[in-house]
Image (cartoon, rainbow, N blue to C red):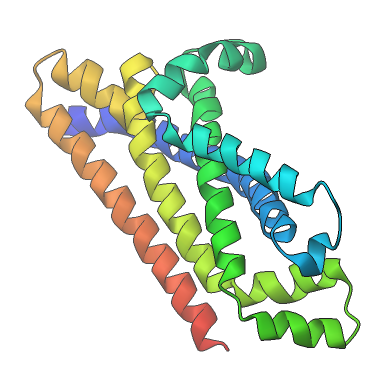
Length: 221
């Protein structure tokens, strides 16, 4: 048992690193993209800008295209990009690149949807108070949509955990790599079992933390 636990420590840390880094990147880029998509779809923000509708349609197509790729195929397609950015296409750091690319459009849609669910009366009230567009977006809409955004971020992290396990197929490290190289290829059912249990435990932990944060935000209002 001690041998299995020693084998588990490093892959567990690699998995946590992959999820944390890709979530951070997706939150920054996907969040910004989601806010942009929402703003372009609202006359209150886009105004009469003639290119808003065209830009929104192009962004929608790109996002839909990226979301339609199975992750295993996306990993292979992004290998040259990983090599260009981090200098290698193998290992934990390299896996962060396809994980981030997979998460960005997913989170962008969540942000756009969450902001769209906010009552339009809130926007009208802010406009009547002469609030700027930036203030409406960042000081009013995002706080109002925060419970939904946290739930969406939780869902994104759980999806990334599943994707990170698949990264083991191409030597991406983490729990997936442990299950495949030390479990499946060496016929160690006990190693595979402990890797699966660790993944399930991480899913439960992420879901518990996300639900707790969401509940506290709602209770504070």
